[in-house]
Image (cartoon, rainbow, N blue to C red; front, side, top):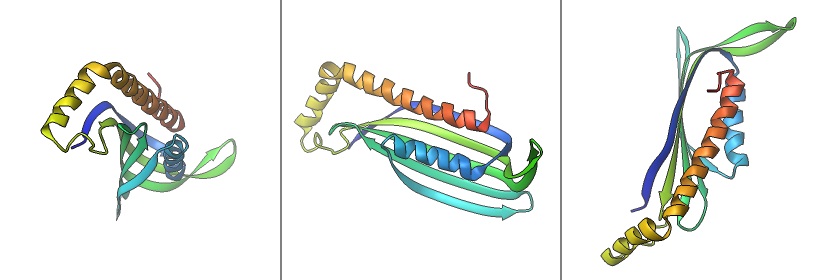
Length: 165
């Protein structure tokens, strides 16, 4: 079985005015431009008196080597989203109002092709290989994936006007 390790996790929450389509497109384009293949695992939309509730789950994968794969999971939860019109610099602009919560998770997946799974000896050798031979490489890939996700989060925060810490 492939081994998955969570490298980084962060949650964003914003209440106010923001454009749903633009945030969605920004996140999707960022992943595509960074070489990830994206799968939408869930899309659920409900209408209520308070506005729309939208739940979205994405899984994005990127092959790094024959042994390592990056995985970014993004879970969206939007509450009370309504279409509104605001005035910016004297011009009326259509936008959305509501609460958006986005949870980002970065996982590194080792031996995703399950080449070391056939025999118990191979599993044992995989442990030695990872612990003593490629330990530094694993650390570098984990750092690289964490930095990638932090860059994406920084872009989404800037778009939503959330202060970056």
